[in-house]
Amino acid sequence: MRIKNWDVFAFITGYHLLLIALLPWVASMLTWGAALWLLVTFIIGGISITAGYHRLYSHKAYSAHPIYEWGVLLGSTLAFQWSALTWSHDHRIHHNHVDTDKDPYSIKKGFWYAHVFWLFDYQREFQPKLVADLLKNPRVVFQDKYYLPLAILVNLAIFGIGCLFMHPLASLYFGVILRIAAIHHCTWFINSLAHTIGSKTYARELSAVDNALLAFVTFGEGYHNYHHAFAADYRNGVRWYHFDPTKWLIWTASKVGGTRSLKSIHTIKVQKALVQKDKRLLLDHLKHEADEMATELKVRLEELATRFEETSLALMAKAREFKEASKERRKVLRREMRRLREEVRRHWNEWVELTHMAAKQYHLAH
Image (cartoon, rainbow, N blue to C red):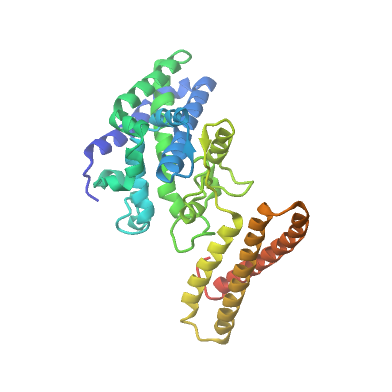
């Protein structure tokens, strides 16, 4: 790797050196107030990136009121990750070319390259067409044009408020420098750790993984395999028990008019996509196997995939009919839909069992 972006290198290296150099002086200044101020600013900066830069601007997973937008655009300056326009531009390239040489932070180039070194090496070729929608947003354009002054002013304000209840050095260390470093590394872990350690439930052909522990420090972004499979969903953690505060923020804001048009993928649609992906990947591997078990597996995969497809389509057709049906007809449709849901559930469980067995038998990634 050759360092090309010396300004970025100097900034990141500089604040890491400051963190180490100032530690002997500030260690005794860590109070409950300082810790709380670090936590509050970390949450505001981090969730502004996940809810704003990532799910709103990069993936258009929902729409937002201008006041909500200003909240995330200003809050994101606490993260010091440059403008929403630039961030979204690079992130869309990542999704369009994930795991290839065109991916700005491809894990194929190594863990630490994906984590941070890409920032020193990456030469951005700005493509206006890639962010044409954002270039029409006056708030995004304003933030991009005046990002550095805005970031300096917001962080000076944070420093000044911190000085009201702690030593200025402690306010600088815990309220600014350490917070920036913490948000940076948590965000970078999505590019590195979330493409390395975890499970591949939804898109086994990609390096992205689901890592529940990482979700706790990235406001739900740790469910990265699901995100790469269904990037338009405003949720990353789709189960009720998944820790995804970004999802909760977006949903809560929708109840008071802050957000709208929340996009989510229906569970059956997710399962249908997984069945098709699994079938394609497994059949591609099994075509090189000539034993009797492989032959039987191919037949069972085809049959079960067809049954799941037919049953799920029938259920969705009944659901559409239900919306327009009369009160009496709905009673009948409820019973039919209940029966179809049970069939879909049974076929899905059979599919999971079959694919796990196939993966284990032929040593395939699952």
